[in-house]
Amino acid sequence: MTSHETSSEYLLLIRGTDWHQRLSPEEVHQNIARFTAWAERLRKAGKVKSARPLVHEGKIVVGRDSVTDGPFNESKEAIAGFFVILTRDLEEALQIARECPGLDYGQTVEVREIASEAGELKPTREKERTRAQQRA
Image 1 (cartoon, rainbow, N blue to C red):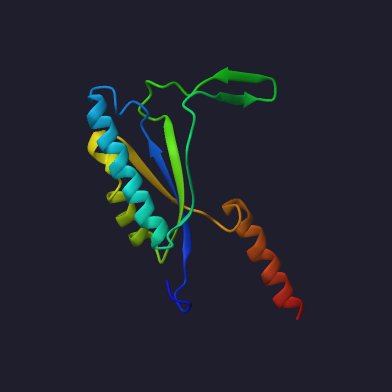
Image 2 (cartoon, rainbow, N blue to C red):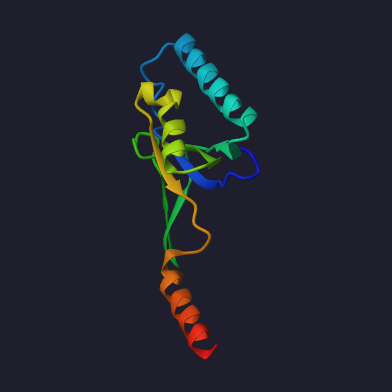
């Protein structure tokens, strides 16, 4: 990206931890190599801010005093890993997501723009700006 282009951050959530179940070890190795090459190409292009796989087991906090096991490996919704990418816009983020090699094996990619602040704060900020303008 050149200095005059604006960029936004997007989170790519790679979902599906059981993609490899019906593949041979050689096929698993080949897909991991494709995935690694895809990620490396994005890094070299300056698109990746952060990326990591996630351990498949964890805990879910559902209340102040309640913790359960999960997510579960057999869930298609289990998050396998994530990327934080820098792109011009949502369309570019979607194009990058469409190139994910895991899509060929049943994984999905959720694309979410990373906000500068919680959306719930926006009405409050707008009211503050209006009051400041009225006082000025």
